[in-house]
Length: 445
Image (cartoon, rainbow, N blue to C red; front, side, top):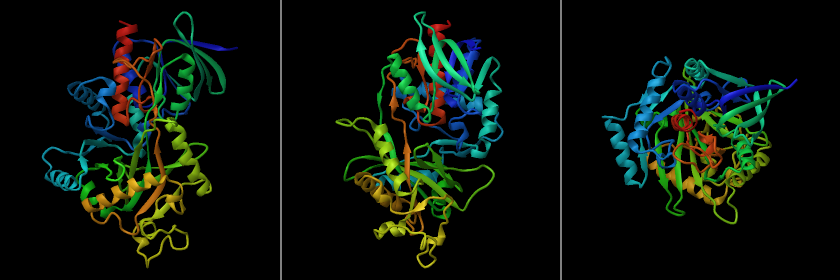
């Protein structure tokens, strides 16, 4: 017999946007809330590296969320207060009064590069579940429907939503007055298709395409000792494109992310165990107009090329080989004569040539930016430095919304990275809070 459940608010996804939204909904008196996720444990950015940037210039677009700088700062402080009791959260970057940061900023400016040193906190990938458990401890009236995949979403003539779900192998029908979609990047395209069927307006946003660098950590310690995750932003001379560093992990590891039809590279750091390396992404922002505006398809095309070239795995190339225009090969990958043993890979990727899979314009932009960065931080282009490809950030599904984050379909709200409202834990949490505030004001006041 088919099960039916009724909720005031049904939240799709269980990352930071969803959890912080649920917390605010409960605090404002909403009594019946469901958080659904297809995973067996709440997912999202909280289970990744656990880096939090408390800076309005990083991971959030106040104009997109229609909030001013004062409100942005207030919300960030609110999130920090919620997390201050989590015992593993520690501050890793203190920008105020740091003379080294001022020196780095001046050197970067001399080379036409913007340098941002946010206030940063970190707990590490190995403490992600503890962070989720800590936040779930705030929730008293929220039901977690884990291992639950929403197969369809429709709006009834009554104004309510009906969601057909596969809940732990059995069919479940849920009804809700309001739906908040916070699907993250992994569920972004499913939700985009479901929202289109409802008539929700959406469009394509930019994506970030690039590589992940891995180097002996002594070459980057002069920076990361002061700024755990430094942000260098480049405007390339040749193409006038934006390139930026992203997700730096001192003592971290490079890892693979499985997207089914292909694999991408990413990086993280554990809180309790460190490696001899540091890794960070260098990514080129790509926006398309016409005739191809589908940045999703463009990014997936690049990912599929690397999938073919690497026999199902991403490709890695030594800087020493790249400079000489040759592919990296297993035979010389650890060559002591060429000083490749100075940095040993933490990830099983296939030695090869990244230029075969990446568009020439993106390669131009990445290499130009790396040469500038090497002038700011001399030594990072050591022959042993590893370049993994591809790293792609799919933030490209975007929903136009009002200040309450309600879509063009009444009662359907969005939040988080997968809907174009944030890029990171703090930004996602802020968008969840704003959506919760809008839901209460419009439907439960």
